[in-house]
Image (cartoon, rainbow, N blue to C red):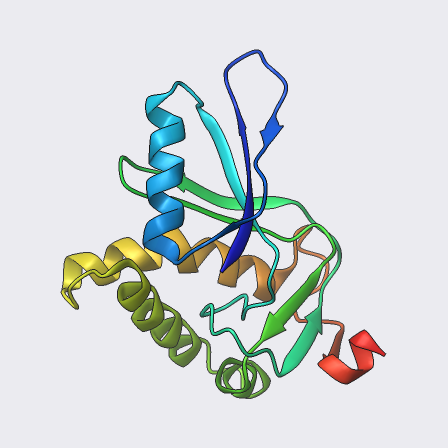
Length: 166
């Protein structure tokens, strides 16, 4: 994945890195190093398109809800999980889009948890599944289903990449 890491020390303006390419473990290691250097506020901004639900790198659909902001930030010693969606546009791989269109929310969450376990190299145990669900899935998926302001119960439109990109 390609990211720019925004990081700041308390009371200071944020600093942005150059583009960094790596997997989740490599990005997490860089962010951990920033933490050891005293940067308490960090966000990795993705530059490549991935499924906003499971992180699959191939987007097949776009969904729209009203624009929002930062949601679901959880920081632990080893992980900093953030979902940012300021424009209200959410990308989905074909599998996640199928679950969304069918409103099969549990299956969508199960897919996201399984992908999260794999990306973070965690064992498939009840504790690890609960950790991924709580830190990476519940907040973002719930927000998608209800909207940021609780005014739209479901996405306002479904668009293919060709329609979005022109």
